[in-house]
Each structure stands twice: as structure tokens, then as C-alpha cells.
Image (cartoon, rainbow over all chains, first blue to last red; front, side, top):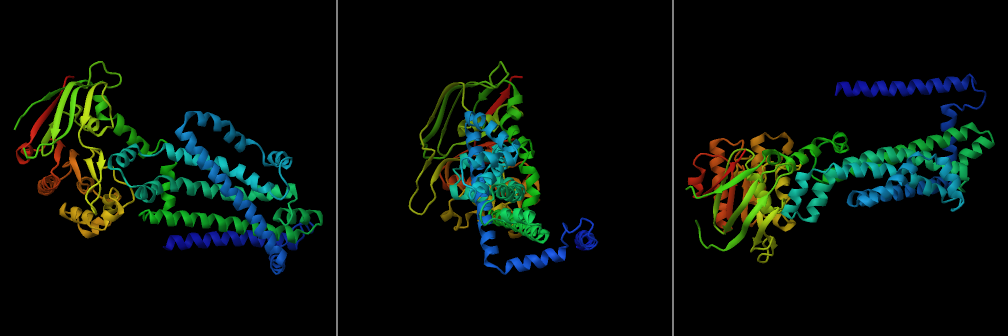
Length: 295
Length: 218
């Protein structure tokens, strides 16, 4: 407890240090007037928050990012399930996932602008960014399933409700939580970048662009704070949702502690599973049966 | 042997090869099990005790031979009772869901309606687990405690055949006796056959069982 408090104080101290340095650099006008102080940025943010347009902008950008995130996550999970079930699907999706992972966001934005309008572009860009993250993590979790437990499910005809609550939650939530933690941050970054390039109406991206065009650094920093806060809040919301499902699945341990184990296809469980199937008996060699009554 | 003696399954001339081995693990194995039968599988490590149980479960398939089952894998019971299974199993490995308590692990295999009856709790208590232990995550359990949870999970399911692969490993003689009493009682109540593997002194006499001795040819 004492160590935790010390850790918390150290972290708060570090944040304070950077804020004070930021304030100092702004006061000294080291970067001319391009660097707004944190106080000025916060003041501007409060001013913006009093207008209805701010909330409309926030809502529309949030809808694009979160909508795209869920589309990407759903596609990633669906493609992973298909790849896990059919070898042909794995070959089919592999180049798609590699492309989505490696092609720069800007390239996608320009390409998609030919097919979609400026307002919905961010939605599709975010989906493309999130899909491979969910695909890879979920596919790894599917492959790392404990074969012994799968046999148990089969032999005992475990009811579907029990499997969803107790088995699937344990097998997949750590991977989904890990994917969410990574994907949400990238979703906000790529989503806003797409809005900037596409100049989407009533968007955070457009406000950032205008801050640059009209040289209003306070606006740039105020909207950046908004993006960071929204991203952090949505990440925590997803983490909390996963944690609640984890607890509902009868587990009291921390979800984070399970992430490392579940995401490695060669983890303990996977090894245990393969030993069970190809274990002692596979090594046993040939044997003969001598059945006889021996009471 | 108990009556009645309705047939459960029959294996005829099964042969099973293992990958990379020229000699088969089983050659021309024939076996018939009826309700009320008690069968004790013994043999050295690697002689195929677990594999034989896996063949019965359908988790392994023979290369040659026939398998016949006279009882459906799963059939509905009287109103209010859970569906009766052809077999229930205590695997050689505990196969418990990590992070869950003992009671959740046992209830895992039961339909929702059946969980309310408290059969899991009663069974775990009879196997010597305290109420505090029953609600703890199984990750904190010793090997013997985990074994009892795995055994309890097998015994709460109504079945025509109970297959218990080394169910007493890690149990002291006192707990082993309690477990054996419960196993026999469960088999009796369900008019079920019992196949147990493992080396326990006097087990054949206690079970009044036929002994199937698997011999390694290596």
C-alpha cells in the first residue's frame, strides 16, 4: 500500500514537472506564440465547452471513431473465426490483414476519398486500423485454447450458457481486452487524422485544421486535450466492461494478469493441451491387451 | 456383478496404431461392458489404459475394428431431471477451469436448473472439502484437492457408465475410502457400469471388479 502511494506520488510529480515546463516554455515564448500554455489551453477548452457546437462536434467525431472501432473489431473477430475454422480463409485474409497493418493511414484516406464522402471517411479508416489488431489477438487466443478443456466440453455436453459464461470468458477476454487497449488509442489517432485530411464537417479534425490555418494554438491544444481524454475514457470503459464480464465468468483475479498467458499460442495451456493428446500413450509404443478375469 | 445386465457397448477386434510405431498399441481388442459391470484397468505406464478410455469416449478412433453402443450418447430423463449421458468421466488430468472456484467447476457441467439442487455442494463436501475451500479458486488447491473436484464433477452427472482414470492419485487412504464409497454409491444409484484405471491395493476386491490387465510389449 505504501509502495503504491509512493508510485502514485512519483507519477503525479512527473506529470506536474512536464506541465510546469510546458507553462514555462509558453511564458518565455520559446516557440514564439505557437505554444499555448496549459492554462490558456484549459481556459480555451472551458470556453469551447460552453457552446453547443463543441458538443455536436464531439458527438459526431466520437460516433465516427467508436463506430469504426466496433466495425473493425467485429470484422477482426469474424475473420479470425473464419481463419481458425478454414485454412483457405486464413490464406485469403492474410494479405488483407498485412495490407491493413502496413499501408499508411494517409494512403487509405486518399484512396477511400474516391469512394466515400468526407464525413464518413474516418469511420472506415478507423475500421481498417482496428481490424488487424483484433484479428491477430483473437486468432492467437483461438489457437491457444486448451485442448483438454475443449475435450471436456465435448464429453460432458457442457450447456452453451455455461460455456459462454465460464469457458469463453476465460479463453478470450484477456485477448479482447489487450486488443481494446491497443486499438482504442489507434482508433482516435487515425480517426482524427482522417478527419483532418478529409476536412469532415463538424469534426474534431476540422477544428485542428482550422487551428493551424488561423494560427490559434489555444484551439489546437484544447482539442488535443479533448482527444486524449476521450481516448483514455473509452479505453477505460472497454477495460471495465471486460473486467465485469470476467467477474461474471466467476473469476476474481485481475484480468490484466491473464493477458500474457492467453496471448501466447505456445503458453502453458497450449502445451498442456498437446501433451494430453500426444502424451504418455503416444510415447508408449506398442502394447498388447491381455484381458482376463482376475478377481 | 450387479443386475440388470443391459449392454452398454461392445468393441470387436479393435486395432490401434500409434504414429511412428510399427507395433499396434492394441491388437484385436474385444471388450463388452454391460450395466452394473465393474472393470478395473491396470498395467504399466504407457500400456494404453488412458487410450482405451479415450476410445470409449470417442476421442480416439481405432484403425481397425467395430464399436457398437446400445445407449444413446445423451438422452432426456424424466421431467425435472437432467439429461442422462452415456458416460461421465474423470480424466487422468484434472482439467479444471482456472480461476473458478471448486463449486463453479463442478456446476460447469450441469444445466442451470440442475445447479439449484445443490448436488455439487453435497458431493464436494462428501469428498472432504470444507465450505471455505469449495468457494476458493482452484488455482490455490493442492493436487489432491484438485483431484477431488475433478472426481466430484464426474459424479454429479447422471450416466450409464462412469470412467475414472486414476481417480485416487494424490489422495490419502482415508480420503480414498470416502471417494470410493461415493463412487460405488453413485454407480449403484444410476445402475451404471464403472471403469476405473489405476493401481490401488485391494481395489479389485472393494469393487468386486473384473481386472483388465494391459501389458506393454516393449
